[in-house]
Image 1 (cartoon, rainbow, N blue to C red):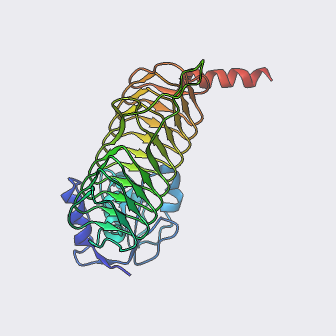
Image 2 (cartoon, rainbow, N blue to C red):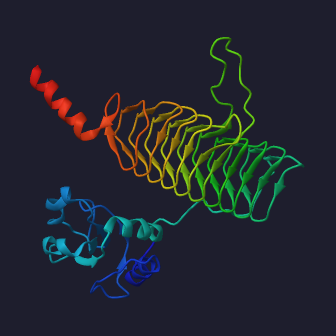
Image 3 (cartoon, rainbow, N blue to C red):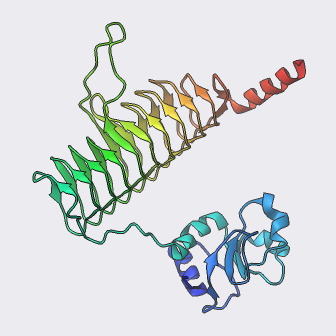
Length: 328
C-alpha cells in the first residue's frame, strides 16, 4: 500500500500551477484516493459534482479536494484541501497514488522479432511475440506489449506506450501517446470507385499527435494521400472508427462507437458523444459539442452544440422533441 504525504500532494498541484489552501499538516499521511461514498478515515477524496452534495455531508475521508464555497457542507472529521478545480486536481493527485506501470524496463524479449532494417533506440521494452517490421523506428523510452505488429513504415516517438495486440503500420506516433489493446492504426481505408467498385490504393499514413490516447479496438485508416491526423492531447475512446483522410484538431474528446467518414475535417476542442455518426467531406468547427447518437450530415460552425438526426442546434432539437411528445 502506497502512503502519500500531504506535502507531496501540495507539491504536485503547485507544480502544475494549481493554488492550494489547507490546514492539513505537511506530514499527514493518506493511504488511498477514493470516492466520497467509499472513503474511510485514512483516505483522500474529492468533490466536483453538485449531484453528490448530500453524500458530501456524510463523507468519512480524512480530507477532501474541494472548492471553497462547498466547505461548509463538510463534516468536522474531513479536512478541506481547497482548490479552484477539484477534478483537475484529482487528475494530478491520482498519479501519486497510481503511478504509471507501463514504463520501459529496457528489455527486448528474445521471443520478439525485430527486422534488421528497423531502428531501435535505447531503453525500449518489447514484450514477447511482438513483431517489428522493416522501415520502422522506435525511439527512446517506449513500451510495446505482447502480440503486437509494428510496421512497416512506422515511427514511434519517445515514451509512447503501446499495449498488447495492437497493429500499427504506415503511421507516426508522437511522444507520450498511448495506444490501447486491439487498436488498428494505418490500414487501408474503405475506398473504391462507386460504379465499377475498383479499389483505390492508399499510399498515405496516419499521424497521431503527442500526449494523445487511442482506445481499445479503435480503427484509424491511413490516408489515400498525405495523412489521416489526430491532434495533440486528444482522447479517443474504445471502438471508434476514423476513416481515411480525416483530420481531427487538438484536445478532441471522442466517446465510444463514434464513426467518422472519410475526408471530414474536425476542429480543436471538439467533444463527440457515444455512437454519433459523421458523414464524409464535412467541416466541423472548433469547440463543437455533438450529443450522443447524433447523425451529422452537414458542416457545423464553431462553438455549436448539436443533437439529433439529422443533427441540429440542441435547443431547437429539444423543442421539437417536446412538440412531438405533446402531439401523442
